[in-house]
Every structure is written in structure tokens, then in C-alpha cells.
Image (cartoon, rainbow, N blue to C red):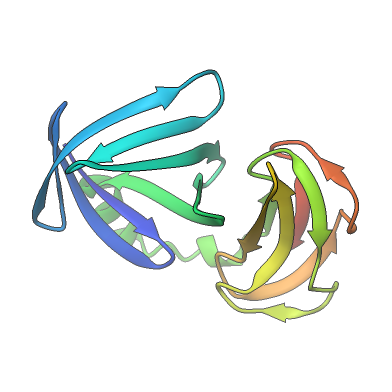
Length: 165
């Protein structure tokens, strides 16, 4: 099966060949992917290199916490992506985006204010979880419409932190 994975605006073509092999942008990898314990922690062994990450599903895709950074990712099969592109995806950018906590933690900082214009990739909230500070970034340009947290607040996974329109 072939998928298009988008991370920070960059598309990767991923083809799962069998349980032990994947092709990423035309390069073959030997893989071993395992969930670790009851937490959303996954271990990926790729060509002998071990990668551990926290992976959380959210409404619009996935949040992946890896080496102190949080990445938003979407995964679509090729046909789904082509169909969405053919339809134009016009409504997508006009909808309100709700930034949700990818994991429980403590709000360290909210470097934006209501009414601020933000660009894709701007830091919206800094969340501390498991002694690591994670910068939660805007997936698109817009205006901060609502802020529901303050520094020092404790949040749970999937709590809405702020909204961008």
C-alpha cells in the first residue's frame, strides 16, 4: 500500500512492501515497528538505527513527539490525496483550527495573544511533559481567536489549548 505522509509541509511517499520492508521516497528500508508498553510510545528500528517516539492520534492527523520536538503529520493513501487535490481543498483553510494537547503536561508559555497574526510554523504554546519542553506550532497561517490556557496550567491529552482562524 502506498501513502503520502506530510510533515511540516513536506510530502514523503511511503510504500509498505511487507511487515519488514518499506520504501520512503524511493529508498528501501528494513524496519521493525513496535508499540512499547501501555503508553503511546513506539520503537522503530530502521536499517539498524533505533528511533523512539510518542505518537498521538488527533482529529486532523497525528502528533509525533521525537527528540524534544512535536511534529504534526497527516497520512493519506495516494488516491485520497489525489481526490482531495482534485476537489481543491478550498474549505480547509477557512475552518477554525483547535490546537489540542498531544499529551498531558504543564503549560510553560503562551507566546501569542488573542488577535495576533501567526504564520505556519510559529510557536503557539510551550508544553512541558515528562521533563521535556515541546513547542506546539501552528499548522497554518491565521489569527489567534481564543486562548484557553495560561502558563502554569495543567492540561490533559486532547484538551483544547487555543484556536486559530
